[in-house]
Amino acid sequence: MRLTSFNSPSRRWWALGVLSLAQLMVLLDATVINIALPRAQIALHFTAVNRQWVITAYALAFGSLLLLGGRVSDLWGRRRSLIVGLAGFALASAFGGAADSFATLVSARVVQGAFGALLAPASLAAMSVTFREPRERAQAFAIYGVIGGSGAAIGLLLGGALTQWASWRWCLYVNVVFAALAIVGALVFVDGGRREGGTRLDVTGTVLASGGLFFVVYGLSRADETSWLDVTTLGALALGVALLACFVVWQRHSRHPLVPLRVVAQRTRLGSLVAIGATSMGLFAVFLLLAYYLEETLGYSPLRTGVALMPLVVAVSLSASFASARLLARTGPRPLVPTGMILAAMGMVLFTRVTPYGDYFGHVLPGLVVTGLGLGLIFAPAAASATAAVTLRDTGAASAMVNTAQQIGGSFGTALLNTVAVTVSARVLANTRLARASAGSLPSANDAIVHGYSVAFWWAGAIFVVGSLFALALMESGPVNSGGAAEQSALT
Image 1 (cartoon, rainbow, N blue to C red):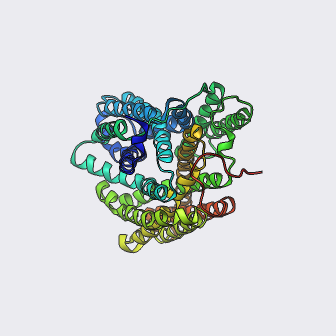
Image 2 (tube, rainbow, N blue to C red):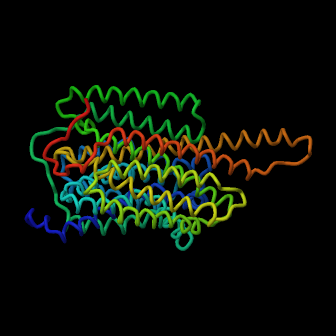
Image 3 (cartoon, rainbow, N blue to C red):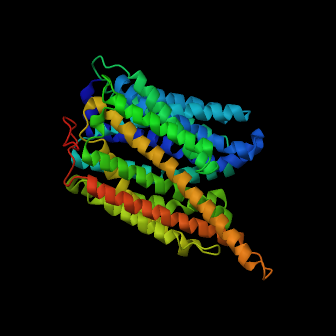
């Protein structure tokens, strides 16, 4: 098949469907297993302490190998990397679905994460080079924005449905179906985009980056499980930051850098990455805390919880399709992204009104709608801008930076806001017990827990506000050139 055949409009939109399916599979797999964990725990007889490792194993492999996966995508070609990533992800999912022990399940999750780290950058890089005309690019990335803003919610819904109607194993088996469809589509519709030249892999940079990201993600996971003052947590975070600092220094001198510094030196791209990271900090934690609130406080079933979060998906879709897709090509990301982050902050403020006896329509739905409208203005313009004006040889590296910002932001936000919620709840419960001891009445645990959620939502709102200020300061006005022929103005 000749390369020119991939440039027809119909093939580009079919390719978008394939790439969207691949991206959705990776994003929803971060949450779809959450719903299945209680039943998997019963079936495989592992403890509640070990349960977290089913999630952490995926996050560690995925987060630590993203930069390597992005560069491999540049070296192998986007279509080859996409197909290998899909096939490996599917095999690991089948292996995990058939697991007969905790060790087998965790091993499968590690392999899933590793192939996901190859798949995610290749998918976004392929989309970036497939859509270069500004209006088409805005429309394509509006669809990506819907996926980025709602993937976690879709994962909760799908996990609840599969666990309730089939088996927890189908939360993994379903990836085989998705991957098979995506592989066929990639073979037919996605341009290979192989790079020419003798560029080699930066082994030293790979070790430093992968090691640094591993210890950062591990430290954040430990903080979520224990505390920020835990010796292992602090040691892992310090080591991770040190390795990443060494990685940055090494990239300045490497002949074949894993992430060329020119990729992050452009102002709008840097602002986009900051916005994606800050949004992921708030978003991942919101899904976690809202799921806890709906299930543990309001007594919703897992499936009903997933359905309850669907208005956010609808709001993201409307915002991305009617605002981002129409305005991005004209205005660029600078008016859209900060506005979206302020809307998301307003949604967090609405969530602070939750009470132990609150109703869904009065205390949850308004926040979901406002937050969703904001997210639709963030993910599409930020992802499009972060991968625009990049030379073809660096599309994988730029796409990996987008996914890395999402992963690190999500890990940090989950650890931070979960810690805030738990700490505040414990303090309120202790203080209330002391105050009411003389009266002989016991405080409501739900009151303390929900107050912890409220404070965490205030923190999430502050994260969105700070992120909007950085995005406004860093992003440049006007549409971003998507041709990729040359880099735009760099930071000085």
